[in-house]
Length: 310
Image (tube, rainbow, N blue to C red; front, top):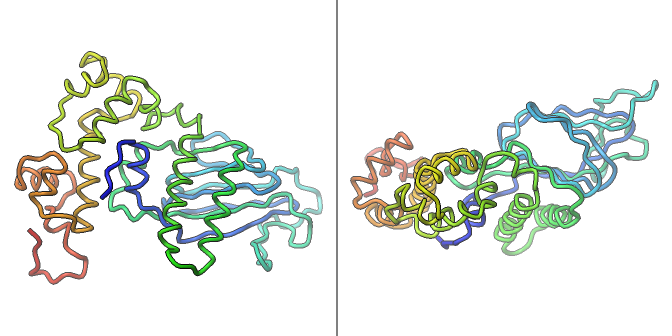
């Protein structure tokens, strides 16, 4: 695994994003879509026109051309036309498959919205930490750069080219990083971005990510942040939404899961790389955090029950 010193880049790289689904859609006249997801990340880029977006617990947002939205864990959301429905608008829930896109509303009228949407999947065995550090909704206004990235991703997904999966993963990583660092509203909610935006906390976060194997204490991290222990603890929890040691353990276990899944080293080596002095100490901590011992977690799903990896 390539170790990066930038926490945001390191977390996004660990996610190993994939694009199992994408499509172009448009709306005409009065239209309405009730979206239902399984908790997977959902993104959309408005190519032209406008739309209204609503998700539970968030204010309704009006999306315009070159706006980009990312819902890290999508369950239920609604998109609809911004125009007031006409008396003879027809069925706003009507869906028609056209040659190159899905049409919502009037299948023959001029579109008042065109959008590129996609659903992401993460190869990482542990996205809990990531989702805990992201806002429930990211909305980036008038960023043509993100729209271009989405179009590139869509084109790459549709074509058959050498190194397709490699290119797709890198483009998706760039898309996520651009969206996260462009969304100033994300700083309103506790999470990694608020932590990194804080001059003191960013020093501790970068040190922690650069050396997850170090025997960090709250005092050590507070010293890196140039704060007293109590001030550091309070600020870290307030800005990131997690206590310092909770964050450290979660990150170590996310790294350990990734290494175990890829069988990247023996147990003792992995234990040392994530800050444990022995394989047994690591096994106890991993079992408590994950619910199964690392030797069981590392086994392929179809492995014979007699197999063990030590």
